[in-house]
Length: 284
Image (cartoon, rainbow, N blue to C red; front, side, top):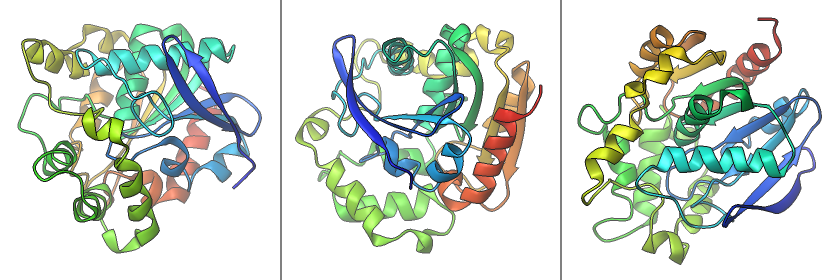
């Protein structure tokens, strides 16, 4: 892995931990929202290949890793999008490519809807927010949302979530990945206030509407060139979201990765890296 430059950047009332490396056009890598997630570990199998072409900015999203543990639960995707836009402001980056996995993909897409002038192109890997609130949660999403419930977090829960729901073949995940994610999931601030949880209270219905980006009329008008990559065996975010995005957005290509799960960037890094570099560098 190339040398990473690490720092903490003040964005509004929050501190965001950020790593960066490489040179060229800026690509912001946005990690998923599972327990124990953070920026660099999520993209460990992609950083080398992408840094050969781009300047990579890899934040821990609010609520995760070494960043401030707060997210506005009434509009989580909007809050995350605002933080990413604020980070670009603080780093004096007027415009960037966004590559987002799951939760990070939803945040990227929301920023493209709110501030399309800040986004050049996007690669969305099994993004959240694509019709996910219109039906019962998937098995994978239930496992994620239940992690801090019941008897609380455990290594057994973490192993089940990663080996069963993030990838199609759980045997390829090293024990150290599970151990690291489990240790990070035990941060007392996160246990007390998980960043990704089921909406509740008087604003729950409104929050669910906000979290379904397919209900946003701006999606059909969004002209940010987008590549959606989706594993056909994704058990967290339904693969049917891929065709929905491709048919709704003005410029959206779709690659369905046969036999892969939710974590395509980990299961098939060569494929993911090749698709990403090609899409972000080719002529329109």
